[in-house]
Image (cartoon, rainbow, N blue to C red):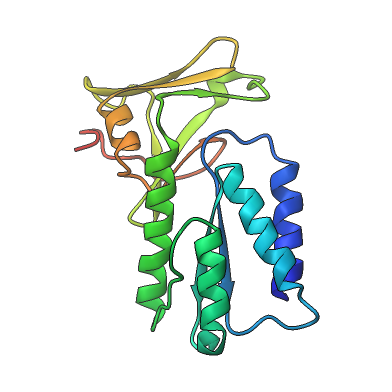
Length: 191
C-alpha cells in the first residue's frame, strides 16, 4: 500500500477508536513514497498525531535507503527522533519489540484501566499479556503478590501488586482484556 494511503487509513482508524492509554503508529516501508503520495500531508499527519500524544515510529526495510532523509524527517516529526533500519528478520523483530515495550511502558501509568464501553459480563473478561512474543492468560489471583480484578459494573480493571509493577515497568509487550485463548502465565507470578 502506498505511504500516503496507509497514513490516511491509520488516521481514520485512530479517529474512530475508543481505546484508552498510549498509542503509537508504526510505518514500515521498503522505499520512497510513490503513487502520488503528498509527503507534506504525511508530515502534517505525524505532527497532528504527536500533538495528540501518538508517536510515529518509522521502519525502513532493505531498499528504503534511497528515502533515508524523508524517513528520518517523518520519524523526527513523529517524536521518535530516528527511523529504524533493520538488516534482517531478527533485527526487525527486535525493533518492533522495542517499540511495543516503549509504548506500553509509557502507556501504563496507572494500574486502574477504564473499560469503555463497560463489559456486559465482567466474569467473562480475561487478561492476556504478551511476553517474549508469546500470549499468556493471567489468572485473576495469579499469586499472593500479583492479581487483577474488574469492577462489578464492568467499567474498571485494577492491576494489583507485582502484576501492576511489571505492567508499568514494561515487562509485557502487550496487555489486553477480552475473550482470548492463551496458555496461562506461570502460577509463581511476575518476577
